[in-house]
Image (tube, rainbow, N blue to C red; front, side):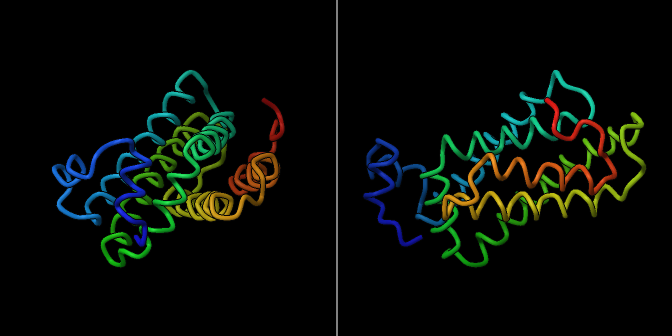
Length: 173
């Protein structure tokens, strides 16, 4: 949130006037950018797993999340680091985004239960646990560069799959 508007203008290759025309203040701009990034991430994950079935979707979704954050790492870092300074409005937005992705994960977990890929689980609890694990590892990587994406995949994917009792083909693609 400490980012100067001039930095935002330079990153967006637009003018201050254009930004202020659409956003009355920097807070609204940051919240809109969080929404836009969440939309992009959801769309990319949904498209990436659309042709897949079963638990392979977990690997593809995680790879897609990492690829998306890789492509937009600098803006994501600015958003995530700076938006924390917004306080309650950002926390409210972050919670809404977390709920959105947890519900998406819960839906896919329920499909896996219905297909017999995994035993019945409390999809709500598991989806929030997965969100916490994914969010914290990805955010740490965005901030620090560690752990690198291959380590994220090697460590996080088996953990997620085993958490729902899925062992078969964990490392396969």
